Length: 344
Length: 292
Image 1 (cartoon, each protein chain N blue to C red):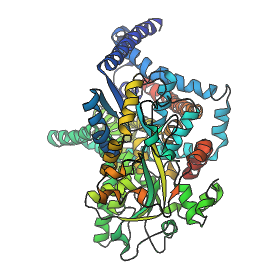
Image 2: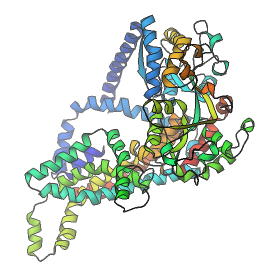
Image 3: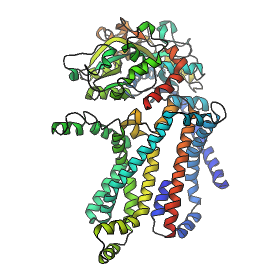
Image 4: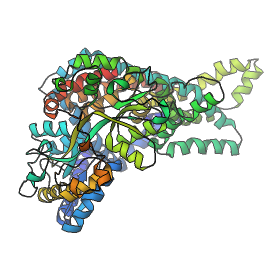
């Protein structure tokens, strides 16, 4: 046994040396690792941000994904951080900043004045901003078109499965409360009892989507002809020639944030990448490709008019901003209850 | 671990000779053992340590686990799914293993190739294929509706049915292969002897075939059951949230809630139960076979 463990230690040291060597190699050749959620969104981020960035600076951008908060936390805690820029949910960005998992943004490199103040903080800059919208498959409902969140809970008029985002993040609870008649300005603090009670009424009809691609598949196949979607994923479906119905009534906005994990080995290059990603051109190009809205205030002027007209920032009449501050403070408590409710 | 158990317990040789060989052959195994220790045992130990150290030292994570009806339900579900899958794989796998053992060369090789090929195909691809087949707008439901056999789609996915179908399919080779090895090692003349002594086909099956294959069934069933207990991808894709299994819960605690203490506790509970089942099986079948 002792012999085994001795050999193990030596093997481990050799392995460690190899890994360290590889790490040095990466640092010297000037490259960063960008991690996002995969699919059509990350493709657009690569084309709009990484390709021009590498052309300008010579720094290569390696793509990784999908974002995984468990991995994120493990990397920072172990000090072995292999991600340099990560696309995360807004509530995670706020909670991670509080827990000391992030590097502060260098605003001598990133132009803070150009960015939408709703989507920038000392520790994170917006990646893009999206809306949760009501999406439906027009083939499933004939002439009737669902409009409000209450319609998603109306299984008599709009029969079939409905689909919602599976994870405990801002969105579904707000939708349930709005459908139950809570006025938009009275949403927070969330009445959790009431939200879960409302969700109970359609629980058997819910199919959860865990990834954007899954949500597209569920809607396009008619498996779940109505539900809550990221507006960009519906945009991508339409671009692919699928007929999609969208209602922007009470669309719920939030931003994905770009963060640099504490202990990143390529901090300087990461900040330069953030500057490129949040630049007017980078944001305009990404928004044109993805259908999500830019967080740089100068970008809409650079975009084709017809595309700019269909972005979340054009649907502000009944728009509601999801409250990331509230969520960051109650993330754990809501999460526990959410998953317990799902498993019941 | 379960793999070595399956092969040794089904091997017809005397165990003493093979254990001597194992002792002499230990040195070449050390690199592999070292790798397992470093990339598997140590990380698992680290997670288990967190279960008694986070958020503060103590057993509060275990108390929280057993005090929660949700977690207990998930634990119960895990056993329900693993048990169902094991029973179904035995029922489906036995005839296949038997056919493999007695069929003429060509057919036996062809069937063997199909079984092995399915194992080599990417797990995710196979699971997605089942999604396409089983969903409400999938091929099975569409065909049945078009034939007029049902009026609305059957709920085949996002529930226990979907998980059982998907997992049974993936686990079948792990039942068929050890069972096939056992059946092949049976001397065919014992069935002739049974017939000569006046046994009916049913008697030959229950009183000769089943006792002789019991060790193979036990080895296969144990492997399938233990693998099923910790299964993640297939239940996550084909099951619903209300029949979640423990591995999914652990992933959720690690990735989404960042509650690694509770995740470690859940992992240790699963590991303990798995080891206990393994020891019981070893006691009743492993040693039992060595005596016979």
